[in-house]
Image (tube, helix red, strand yellow):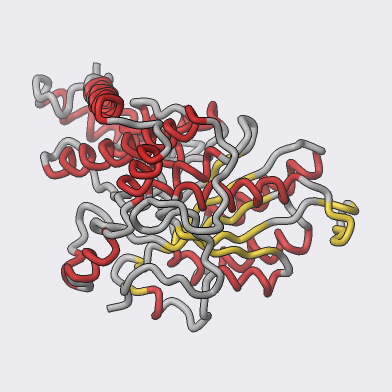
Length: 377
């Protein structure tokens, strides 16, 4: 067992204690009252969407899905630190990171097996989600480098899990980012497990954040279940990515921004995916210890203490979230889903094998024309 509970050594940035009270000497970020409430509401939205998605999978209405519960603070708050034109690049579990950009019902279509569920993300400066571990990291570095060369005032925040730090793509991306000072923020969601492999078996490094030192740029560790702390460090990292630093001239284009590696220390309460059994590699006592840091009640307590939330407003938020998620599910399930679409995005040019499969489907449709699963109208 590698879990334990939230560590506080090695300079972990925290603003809220585990009860949701501002720690002595900590500075609350300068966010207006409505944005603070919005962060809380979006975290609740992400949690409820997560619960519905898991249920949909169990009912056979959605494919394999990776739950996010426990990671809402890191995802939602980090996106709030971005400007409207900044880019978001993520792995596959960071559903909450997309919520502040306006989550469409089309997002659910991807998990229901339809490629159209990826296409709409580009309209919100979000890269398509990525299933292969860590392969989005070089793309994020390339996008950030391109923005720099073009003179765009743009940062790229790239999410990935602790397991991705064991992939070659991680090291290549960070190495190039450090050499060419690209405006990127590498956001490691350290949820303690790469599927069933604990963080302690991933690396002998004391922290994941310190790996940035090998590439010559900033690193920071933050309580990833504290939305205020996450916003603070992410905002500073985005500012660093966009600001010229005369002390670090780039070998390519002169004085330039600096990247940052953020290690957000957190825990996933649920399974790795809906086809995983976490009881095989961790026990309930570990989960109970981490639930003491649940980001939702911590943020709720903070808002109540500041007079920004009461029972009536909290109930209204809960009802609004429930209605919005139900609407997304209804729209996704009523979408015109054509079996033929599964062949449209496999290759740029149709192969012989794809043509054979299309013919096979056509034959099945002809034979079972009234079968709803084969209907393509």
